[in-house]
Image (tube, rainbow, N blue to C red; front, side):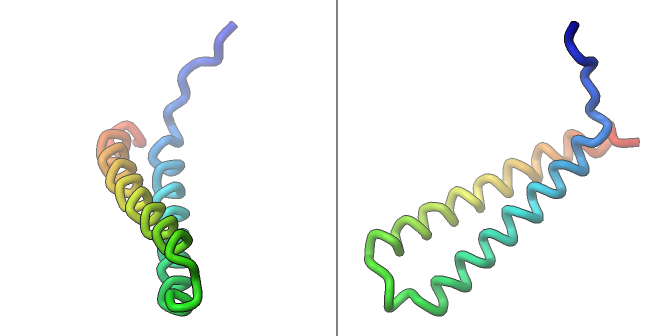
Length: 73
């Protein structure tokens, strides 16, 4: 038998995902700030591409959070 759909903690989980993704973004940017002149062009490109994806993910999480917060109470 399938588990019932428990969405009671979705907003909390989304907030946590946003925080984790923002932290990863900050760490990657800090790494670039300190080592951009020491890393290969490919690594630089990869980090910038990942950060672009992180920005998109955060935007998606924020939109999802708006949908889930009314259900949290």
